[in-house]
Image 1 (cartoon, one colour):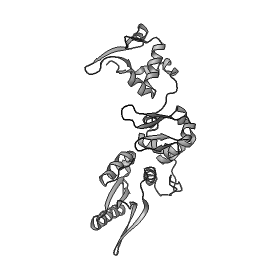
Image 2: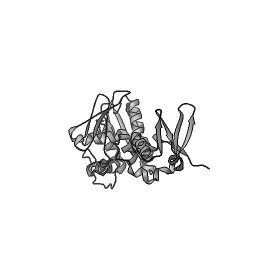
Image 3: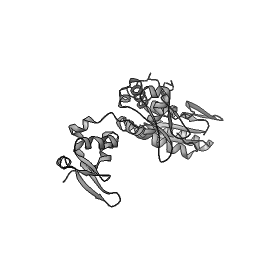
Image 4: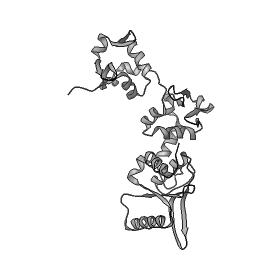
Length: 276
């Protein structure tokens, strides 16, 4: 089976580099040349595995074997400005959470839509940009951000790495479970007003929600995949209380914690709250 080939732009994405820098490098390396505003392969480029692909929509373009990413020439690529998406890919985080972490450190701030660089962010090498298509502002960062201890500490804290029962969340709260820490960090970063271990009362009945959002009157509870009989009984009791007394509720299970950003943002939107 022949090796998969990808476009120069796709190769740049795979390397987390700017595509224009890759085009320049390949041209300087003698792999391709621009003729009449179109890129053409040289003999050197063909030797390195470059081919032409004809696409019904995009026409003819140069493609490279995926293994080319390990070629010594590509190590000469300059440090590329990293978008939140690039950083998220490297750290296994959604781009939205990357921006919220940068904002929590005071390096960017929210705009009506998009993000604006702060003086502190500029001092770290951040750059301000505006999308040509939408006009929405965004920022990019040097690769040195990925070596910044303050940023890496925030990432580790967000993910609940090295968790102990005395570990503080980003808000300063101490919670009993790693999953609760991750959820607390998410609510804090998303600027969702909430209480932890909140007691709800109705007459002689009362229960304790793991988290409670007073503006929405929504409870959030965490449940494990292997809960015992007592935990299952508490779960059923909570569900009955919420339904009986008119509270909305969200249940998060341990196995879903890795998809928390997508999952919780979608569920909160159903209750009328759009997180940034």
